[in-house]
Amino acid sequence: MSLRSPDAVFLPRTYAAGVPYELFRELRATRPVCWIQEPAVGPWPAGPGYWAVFRHADVSHVLRTPEVFSSHLGATQIRDPDTGEDLEFVRAMMLNQDPPDHSRLRRIVAAAFTPRAVRELEGVIEERARTLVAAVAPDGAADLVELAADLPVLTLAHLLGVPEQDRRLLFDWSSRVIGYQDAEYARSHTADDSGLSAIGRAALAHRPPAAAVRPDGRPLNPRSRAALADMFAYAHALAERPVPGSVMARMRAGGLGRAEFENMFFLFAVAGNETLRNGIPGGLHTLLSHPDQHRLLLQRPELTDRAVEEMLRHWPPVMDFRRTATRDTELAGVRIRAGQKVVVYHASANRDPAVFPDPDRFDITRDPGDHLSFGSGPHFCLGSHLARTQMRAMVRQVLTRLPGLEPDGEPVRLVSNFQNGLKHLPVRWR
Image 1 (cartoon, helix red, strand yellow):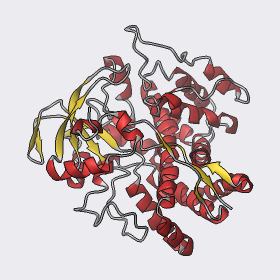
Image 2 (image 1 turned 45 degrees about the horizontal axis):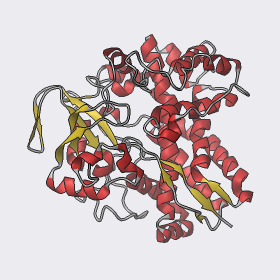
Image 3 (image 1 turned 180 degrees about the vertical axis):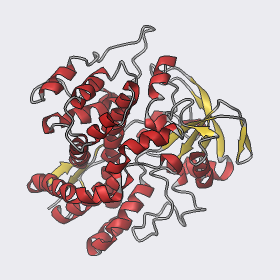
């Protein structure tokens, strides 16, 4: 299949070379709601196809209309869950719920992510960012992906009450779930139990072998309960002795059912980690790729807030999300039937010239506008304040403590049609 074909927006290998912004530009102008085929990819079978949505106004409409475009019917990943049991399980996740059930789940943990709650963490986050950058400053070179990955893991461990020695488990679970389309990330990153807490060591006993398959011989869905048995065993053990005031304590007190509890832990341990693991190095790579903007931010650090928003617009950590039509409807003049998949492309919406003048230009003085990197509507990202705080902290520390920062080789992209990620970003400094 040609990477110029509309169907290329589905193929993970398309994104190994970069987000197909030229194709998005063409489709926004000519086929803003376009039918996309889902061919088989590796061991994963072909899917039924879906409607892809590329314009900002239409993406916003889909995200703000859950009664027509449901997160619950088929969940929110492009690929359909392998079995009805898998679908039933993931439907219990807050991300895959519609109001009012979504609202009930969100209220249980929302207090931990309010602007006021995040402000109370700012000092902790800034100090951790400072410590991480100071540790590599004498080296003169580093992989910014590895450096950036530690901050969200440390922050999540703090919020969840995960013992410090177990934080690498959070990194490992994210790699297995988010990177399953990429051979390097699909491999487990935790080979032994050295240094883990007692519950961390016990959890590893539940890990399925790397070659585990379903009864039909296909690999386990990386988001299925069976594939994440070790993570859920860990979550239940941790909930027996939650740190007072932690998100785990709120979850335990919230009256969650078993599947709701497990999926809530999944959401924070994986989604809350991986988006920043992609967003921080992606934003810094964008900055370093525009030396004039890099110099401007060094001269005017008061632009950091705007710079972070422009990084998020230019490099959205999540490129798309799926919905399912609840009834026959119409979008941008296209008839959509009940039960069909509808996939909104945030990465395209963030470059829509109807909303962002000269949208391909990276400009840290730009009015942030209505970028959709955190979504819109009832599913607007619960952790958006926390994400911004961590990005600002890391940008400040990197620019302050790593003088003469510049690329030191080609970045290596994550192979994924969902996460806009880098696996490696080599840099050097004086």
